[in-house]
Image 1: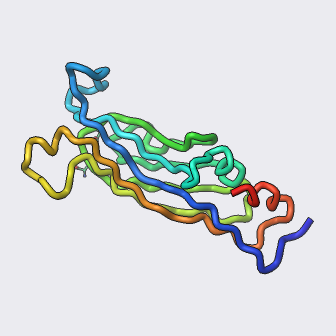
Image 2: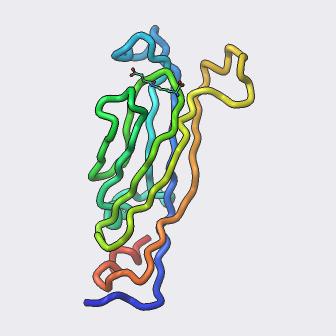
Length: 154
Ligand code: SLL
């Protein structure tokens, strides 16, 4: 089977992070007492169906700050996400590789956000859950015919 000329498929995704302040009275403690937040960085289907996303996405590699061991987290099945605890904000490199190995991996960058931007210095800000997410589309040009059945379901 060959490639479908002049065909293009868009798979909508959401990527980003959610960070929740750790409340020692309520939450499981962090491994390190200096850690102030429990956060998750994620890539998910914008249509809410990660099973469909997994038909196209082979793996998602999240490269964290070097203070995390291991620094590189490779997720091979949904949910494509990493949960950690920490104290600082940093840029996370997200590399999405595709089932079709001829498809060039998609490189995204996400700034992990733990604190609200607008009220720096406001102690209440340190108690807030912070969600930072972006919409994007995985564009597959001239996909293999055998991919079409999968992709049509998006
Ligand atoms: C900053 N440039 O200074 C950033 C670095 C690093 C965050 C933030 C985990 C630390 C650990 C952690 O939160 N690292 O597990 O030891 O704000």
